[in-house]
Length: 196
Image 1 (cartoon, rainbow, N blue to C red):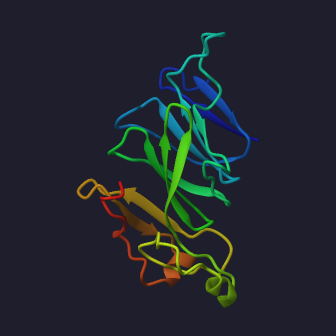
Image 2 (tube, rainbow, N blue to C red):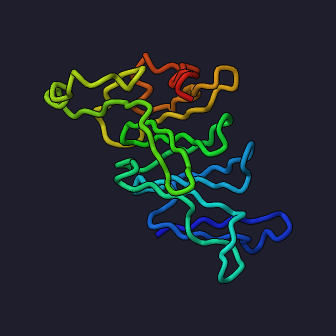
């Protein structure tokens, strides 16, 4: 179980909002530019939850405790912990996620569900046979193909690019697997503006 507590400056000793999650919260981000009441959380089990701090429970008239959207296996969830989530500055209901499963995804909150689309994959293959087993007829999702062979964090941090509308790689954690791949350069475009 996990928990998110949101405090205000008017009462820093007691949370204004408390949300429970089925797994530990690894990362979160408020949609500060377009919808400041939306909070997206990336969890240790790979799932994503979106809470709306402005939504009220009709029975108690207090804050709604349930998420307004949550990823599932059918809508698209990560298989490993989510290391970073970030809201898009272009679309009020869109955000990006990255996980140690090697997938970079975009989530869109709709009225009825959370729709998740894989933008690209950092291939994580344990041996050459696993790479050969990939279907060569599938359209390429990735702009960059990198093979990570060790377990653990990929060590990547990303940010949206205000000039292009795309997403750029902004930091590679020293000592991480990503540092071993020269094709991953800070400020390299990961998602072109046509996909944003």
